[in-house]
Image 1 (cartoon, rainbow, N blue to C red):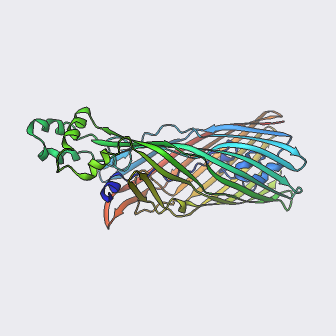
Image 2 (image 1 turned 90 degrees about the horizontal axis):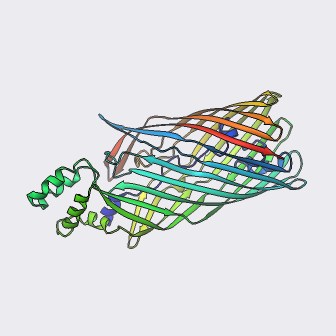
Image 3 (image 1 turned 60 degrees about the vertical axis):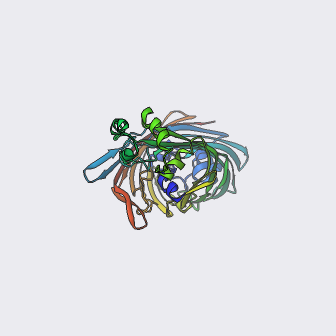
Length: 439
């Protein structure tokens, strides 16, 4: 079983699966907001800010498009992902209940990931493609003691789905079966040396995982505010997921059926094939976040803000996949990290606000347990955006983020032997559009 576990690997998520795209307005200034009074959108950044919303109803909705790419290089070999466009959504509805008491509900995509590597690339046994989608519904309540101090709390209910595929055998490894086959079958082997001979697909949906989001907002003066918020870890449990085995060609499926009857057929591969149609359980952690921010209205035309975001990536220490009678552990050894954010808002005219921001995000990845399903890197981001007010009750927000991943050399080492490694380079472009309504 140890050989089988290492053969399949089964890492379900990639570094970067936590999304910071839940507001077009705030994405424009580095996606910070812990110390800001954002109305309905404060439900994510700091629930205490909800109680400073204008009017009796505050609605916000939008989406961000993620155009991402990862390039792998090892010597003269290179491969590049062909990822689909990600489209995380966000929506907020805030309401005034009575004086100083506000409530609302939000729905966001706090986590998600999509990677599509070439099916027959050299790292196919680690990952071919993966899709992770997580939704969070958060009812929230906020109370304002006075113009200087407020508190807020929300209950997070997270749920989602996962699908991934990876090779069980390396490309070209079917050549090892030539001695087990009569000569008339050798052409089939030779015609399939450039395909992934045997793949596994895993898919499933999680139940609802619960967590909480709390915060406090303090404004000692009209121009200065300080915020502190905490979003707890949410452990999403995937139960009853399904596994499916596929073959590089119909001819290979026939050959594997025949070869599996041979006493010399590898037990690990035979065991993997036996998992076809089996159910599995797994746990997917959404890490905790502690945010500390400060905002200063330097002039009547300019607002400045800075924020520290401490992410509890240690939750992704080991991933366990449990099949009937088989438990597979994949060590990740992620570390807690810090994200540094600064942003500015410029009130150009009564109806137009411009924004800019900068983000530095440390990778939590262990560079000695580094696989292409987890292409982490230190990331530098620059952002810009604006708000246009076509009517008193309506705002149109637009933002753009460029995400530059520092080239990272990662290796997967077991028993002091490097099993896979190379250089990884990630880039992403994120345009975002949102609409806000106040009544």
